[in-house]
Image 1 (cartoon, rainbow, N blue to C red):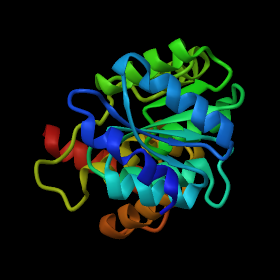
Image 2: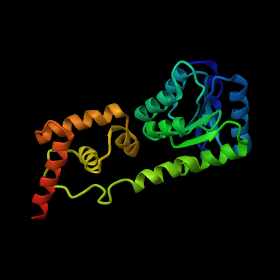
Image 3: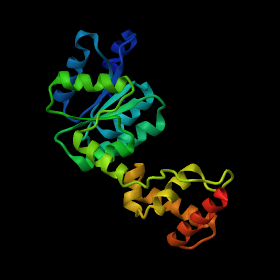
Length: 234
């Protein structure tokens, strides 16, 4: 671990009710400026700084801050991978992405990886502080553009939602979700986007569904699901 984290350890020890923040940005001057701004007026306690992706994960796992502000320009380990690792290894830490510009695809991948917020680096510090405060309160910050995409995808989801399911089933809840969307004629990419999963994960679930249902194609799985639901309703 590097000296910035050690230098700020006193701030971590002195923090009481202030949200504890880790700042990860490859730009040393940007890190310093953001750190000073976040600590102003006692709003946040910056407990560490990271200059690359690997260091960000290490410090987050060690200090377990309330928030990690991750610049999308991180090197060593890209920001989305950093987010995934921090979320998977810590229980209460939330990640907010700090992007150089609006990028809908990157924002979507960040949210899928577990990010709770996506803000633009050029925004005023007061705006960034408000975003962090909202995330600290348990809410999410996403762009109006991504909100529109998610609403449209929700509208295209089958009206019966999770569908009627047998009380006893070999399928897990996640596998039923996958099967429900398959019944709605969704492909792998659409299912991945709807459930915030990777296509590889979706394909893995699909294979498990086919195996458990004893079928060899998605069409056969859809037909099997229909029969299972018919049995429930009879």
